[in-house]
Amino acid sequence: MTGEPVLDIRGLSVDYGLGEDAVHAVRDVDLTLHRGEVLGLAGESGSGKSTLAYGMLRLLPPPGVIRSGQVTYRPRDGEPIDLMSLSRSRLRRFRWAEVSIVFQGAMNSLNPVHMVVTQLTDVIAAHEPRTTAAARKARAVELLNLVGINADRLTSYPHQLSGGMRQRVMIAMALALEPRVVVMDEPTTALDVVMQRQILRQLVELRERIGFSVLFITHDLSLLVEFSDRIAIMYGGRIVESAPAAELYRSSLHPYSDGLLHSFPALRGPRRELTGIPGSPPDLRAMPTGCAFHPRCPKAFDPCAERSPVSEEPAGHGGSDRSVACWLHSAHEPAERVTT
Ligand code: ATP
Ligand code: SF4
Image (tube, rainbow, N blue to C red):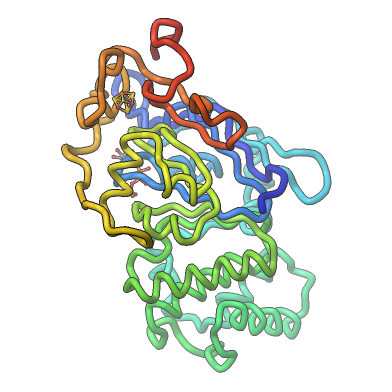
């Protein structure tokens, strides 16, 4: 179901701080989001998911710095845009209009003293100042309807809405300018499980109707298995596996993905043992040598503590749109590879 690439990340590395004290939070990441696709980004807390999303949009708070990499956005028409060299003012226009983002805990960032209608029409007015007030209001009604909220809520204040409704309003705001890409960073974690799934189901349905792409970030892999087309798994700042969601669920290749999948009950098919992942995520200031997962990996073998596997098409899965960084699935002998 996926179309051409919309957002292409190549070799992105992001640090917090400078020099010897820098924390390398994102390390040499390649990732492509295709048109109309829901791409899920999963990994334990601290694996670098948010840093990757904010880094690619140059929204990093200090002391975050982009060390290297390229991010290319392909608009509906016109030449590809290099986000790393866009001027600050063009970048501001670009966000919301082309790529919008729903932050962690965004539902609490609605302005408590303004009605829903004001907050929605303000976004439209800021980017499309030539629209009339009546047109902006009509659009606000349309946006609320899109996310399943009745127009009579337009005059509500945030405290008069449930958490689920506030989150829907945030999603409506993110869709206000018909962006091609919506980035969602743990948008539903503050909600109960039923509400989370309801909102995600609606989002996927909207994506099919309106045709935007979604980069969905969560530590909850079970949500991604249900709602995304493709999943990328992060560990210690790197993407360690990426695959179509159904394939990852059926046969994950990286032992870390396996551990994440065995941290929640099976969604379908036979029951499986919940084993979780022993140990804790790596300290980014003192990363293990070789494969960063080796101290926790039940399948670690000879090369793992010394040589770092690079992301590649897994042996035996040619042409399958999968990649994995693990010596178990490398088509190369460890001795042939460069240590990083
Ligand atoms: P979570 O799900 O908890 O948000 P995450 O996978 O999104 O986790 P990030 O928030 O991107 O991870 O953090 C990646 C790493 O960068 C973490 O180890 C974190 O400690 C570090 N980090 C994040 N912000 C800063 C900062 N302002 N200064 C220094 N280190 C930071
Ligand atoms: Fe485990 Fe080795 Fe694969 Fe790393 S490279 S995940 S340690 S088997």
